[in-house]
Length: 474
Image (cartoon, rainbow, N blue to C red; front, side):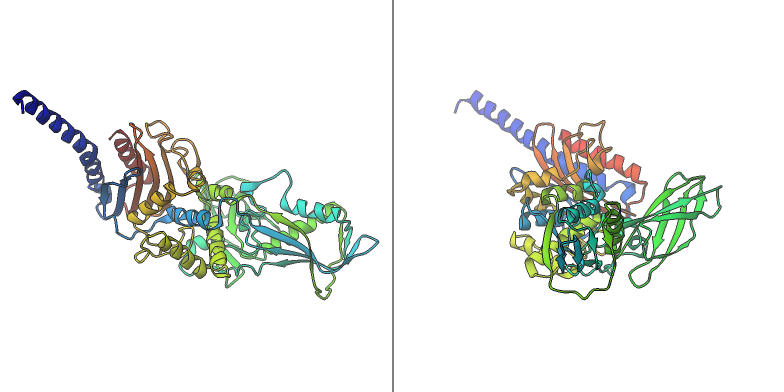
């Protein structure tokens, strides 16, 4: 071989090796520098960075360590829901009657509302021009019903409402601690309206919506100079008593605090009664013996991909847990926590993922007992990138600087529009799992789970933003 040609080949090989090194080594170095920060001296940090096209592992830290995922767990649930039920799946709610409609337009019987676990039923996230209770009332009117001799009867037996034993006391009374119900209505929440005075003074509850919550309130909330809602509602499913502690801003009237309601079907009956009254439809509320019912009409939810989008964009715990229940029902015939959890794990096992070392206690990530590794999230993200529901899944994820829980994250940086991910947060927990498109168009799967960090959330966000920008430019 010509000596000059041999030297040229050596030079080209050296350049190629350096180029490859430049692609892979800095990525791990960025991760190593990130986890070495004093903010994480006592933290557990699981990180996996992969090349989506090649599947190559680019960098990692404690990849198999089980950590609290918080709301990134919604990825596991929502992805399984899309795969099992399909993007076009719809929940239903049936309106039945158990008597005849007479010639005088009176129903000699009851109106029965049977729910099948639709999380969107009356939800603020799917608000229409007409509320669901008005729509039902109008449809009853269209069926020539002007008088109901019996009652409005609800059937929520599709799901047995139960608060998970692993949810903490601080969460279960508040709106984000709402649990699935066969007849979920208006996100299973009620609203307390407070009036506050000078700093340190006790507040008053002016009213509640709905009026009939069935709850008794012990109000210990005080007025504060802090300009945000720091009121917490305590109470579970063993009592109708609720204690509210904490503070709300001073000198406010009708300050709203939302709580979780365990029996939303009562709120539905109250709202429907009002809508019927406005249309001039009388309800006698007689105790008539139940007879064989017949279906009058059926209401359908938005398509599953739209529900999944709200679940992940807005990080709605109730929606994610409803998806878990429906997966359990479809796979086992009964909708409950245990069946849903087991069905989700079996699904991912069928896709080749090892679920032996993950612990799931709900579908939303609200339980502090949930434990998932960064490696498991990386595998889920890779699976969904190859799924026929890929576009539906990706469309459900917040986009940096543009939408959802990432709307204000990275909006003035290079990763705006390039980092698409689900976030999760609890006290001492911060997680990010999603897809990053780098400067040269390479697509990464990025899973970052941090537990027990020692700095403010804003400082941590800045550190994460720096890391993601480094990965973007790598």
